[in-house]
Each structure stands twice: as structure tokens, then as C-alpha cells.
Length: 312
Image (cartoon, rainbow, N blue to C red; front, side, top):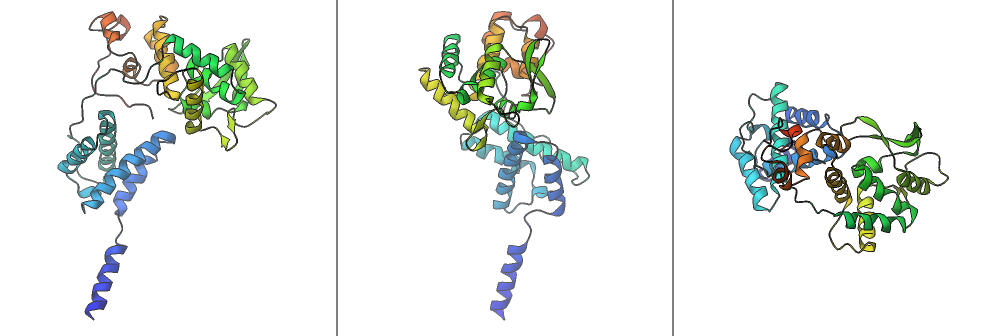
């Protein structure tokens, strides 16, 4: 009888659900508001936090402020970047805020959790004009599937997800210019002009196909991992020893545009940044050195405070 009782208790413990119905509703509800890479990133944040709570036998809705603070300290001890810690705390705070708004929880334990303060200097790998030109030349000398993504990322500043998600049906012409209609990260559909060299590269990549993805690899549609491999191969052919990726080309586009005198607001629009502070981060401390402590006149009304949502 004792053995049976023990076995029954063990089975009951194993069968106990990880989340309550209210916790499941909150998790599903907050993730339903996002799509694509943003949703994947937030799901990862919540999964890591929920796993930590489970390991410490704490229900998600029974956690206190100290539990969230300790989660942040654990991330810092593991060497996570301050931007990563901040984003995960923002995700957790968003979960509890959603639960309070939906009357699933009385009080958010993450409402007053302190987040690491971030600097606004870009630490990304950058390419100068000569390196960017060398990459464009190396891409042009390579096969067509490797040629087209490079100028599209470097000269139009697209996110890799925007470029990889483009379809042949979205190519068009407007007032004598070749165009491409893409879906931005925010879900906004925009039409961008294509320089002649980009249009020629895309035509070579498309060939005789009339529909489907512009960038096609043997496995199917090009994804961000495949794009990263292409960028690395082209960089090696160009003799660049830096560690570069697709975002390096977007970074180079923003820096080159600002160096050429393009107004900051126009660069923000071209890069599809929701917050002007995100665009400024690409520039680094030299931005303020050149224009004074307040930046250029067009930026003097923008406060640099808490970190805006980053790119995912």
C-alpha cells in the first residue's frame, strides 16, 4: 500500500501542469501581438524566464520583484550583453503588464525592476568606403545568386529578413525607375527604388522565373543564415578580415548616407527605424562631437533616455 501511495503521488506530481490556465492565457496573448523574428525573440526571453522559475519551483504569477532582479543578475553573470538583459527584462515586464491589463494578475512584480542603462555608441563592426566598394566589386564578380543580395543590403539598407522575403511579383516600375515592394519589420508595405546596378543583379538572380522568391537557393528561399554565409564568402573574396554579416552592410549604408550629408530624419526613414535614437546609435560618439552636445538642429528635440526597442 505504501508503494502504491508513493507511486500515485509521483504520478500526480509529474502530471501537474507547468502553467496555470491564466499563465497560459497571458503567454499566448502577449506573443499573439508579434510576428516573425520579433515573436521568436520574445518567445525565447519568456521561455528562459519561465524555465528559471520552474527550476526554483516558483509559479510564473507567484514570482516577486526579487525573482526578476535575480534573473537579470544571472544573465549578467553569464556574460550577456546589457542590451540583451534589458530586452529580456522588457519582455518580462510586458508579460506582467499584459496580465494586469487583462485582470489576470493584481500587480506586476516587474513594474519597478531596474534595467541596465545602455550607452548610445555603436559597437558593431563597420566597413569604410573602400571596404564597402571592395565587397560590391567582389559580389559582382561572383555568381548571380551571391551578387544580388549584397548591393540590395548595402545600397538600400534593407534588413536581411526584408530582402530574403521579397518575391518576384513585387518587382515593378514607376516613372521609369525599377522598384521593389517589400514588407517592413513593422508590417508596413513600402515601395523602394532600385539603382540600375541592383536591378541588373536582381534580373540575373531571377533569370527566367516569373514568380516565387527573388533569392532562391537549392534548399528553397534564402534565409538569414544563408545570407550570412553569402556575405562572409564575399567578404573573404574582397580580402576583408573583419567578422561581417548582413547587418554589417545595413550599418555601412546608414553611416555612408550620413557621411554624404543626407539629413538624419531621411536616413531614419530609409532605414525604417521607429525611433530616431536607434539611427543615432549607428553613428557613435562622433555624432555629438561634430554637432555639439545637443546634436544637429533637427535632433535637438529628441531626448536620449531609455533604450528604444532594438532590431530583431
